[in-house]
Length: 177
Image (cartoon, rainbow, N blue to C red; front, side, top):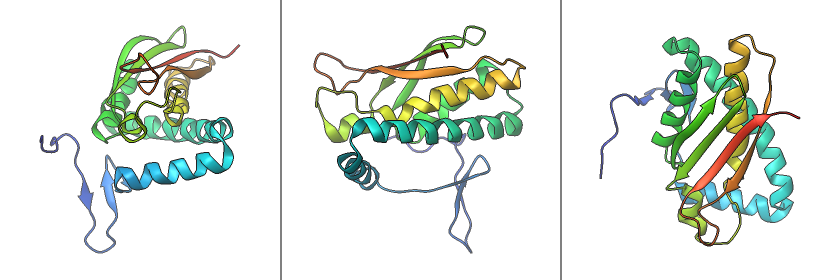
């Protein structure tokens, strides 16, 4: 087992118990707890409706995170996106690898390995990591706006390791139609 990397500092306020990483308050919960809650909501709303809700919330959260992290670390452009993928990978969601990125075109392709959702669900022959989808568009759009671009993107999960015959997941962004 690998110990936590020093570049991902977690601070715990001894008076309040609030966990902080990169100047943002964090919650620390077991994976099964989070995913069991996720599945319960999915069962009530259906995966399509839940995906719509999560897309909007994830987009907003990614935008905020990228904005704050770019400011904190003096990052811009692709460096912000790569920092985001690194931090997501360090937080137990899975390993996110940017295979392609072209900010001017509003396009990227991200591979997901070791998905927390796939570890829990197993092979269910459907795309199950839709929670992440809005994150990529939110990150791209924040970076684009910071560079003065009016281009906006949409993201889509095109493959999941939970699907038969697939070992990894893939997400893409492209410009809004």
